[in-house]
Image (cartoon, rainbow, N blue to C red; front, top):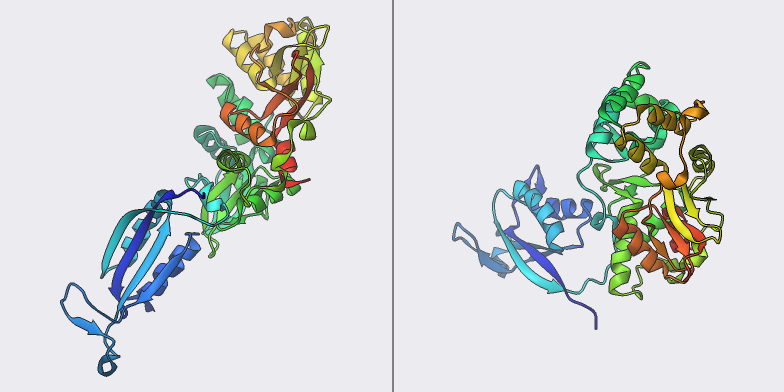
Length: 412
């Protein structure tokens, strides 16, 4: 049996002649609901009724010109109704707004409006680049849309900062630096006098608020996109959606029912179908300099530490290496690590130590036959980008990451 879910009914009672900016009010309400991707709206014209003024209105043959009662009814999830209620209140200067709790069966596909982040940090084309970076770090986000008036002119991502602004490190590593080093790196950008307009990606690909989640996933997988601005039908920015948002929605839906028609075609695949089998490895005694070189040589940005028999002992991430070195208050070694990660030459003698000193011994693993729905759940629950695939004996088989999972789900 299909599950009933909690919903709310927003019912607006008004007169047929109620207007807003020269248009019938009921038309404005329905139009605003449509632009914001509400599940649906219905307008009903009554044949008899009265409102607060106690005047009786009827559709009897001799009084067809009277101000007949009209009901606008919108049904959606409580969160979506809560977002739309202030809009309805601002438009409705005469009439009555009723809110009711209910339960419903939605035969609707998952839409981007249900998974996007509505609280979006934005900048203008003329925003100085250091301000953009500080906003990204402060909000702990990886991208900000660039608004020229109400139009999305572009987007500034961490990749744009590396490619066009000379930022030496990824944002997630930058955020782990001691305050003095963090400010120093941002000041380097200030010297260039750049603005958001000069580093942003433009034109930017966007999604309509009513786009199906499965279609957004396919687009992200095909174009290798990590996040996209979301617009309403008028082109106004309504939110932003990331790969994690999409994966979270798919994982949640699959947890309820793996046979939902809105789920992507690859949901029945397993970790074996999407894993990388050439994950970089090192021994616990491998010199730290060699581990760093392996990190730089792989897009996975991880090195799995194994023993002589291939059993997993730990894992080294570039980000975690920076955190560990900084935590032990070794400025010389930290500068060397940062220089290597930034692609600069560094004094090899300064970088003493071995992999065992910086590796994490807690490694999130899964079996090769793990269904992709479970892989998605683990990626979201553990808040990681990649998971290690191992056999029952703990031997390394490969690694899965968000990109590979997205492509697998989309059927690529």
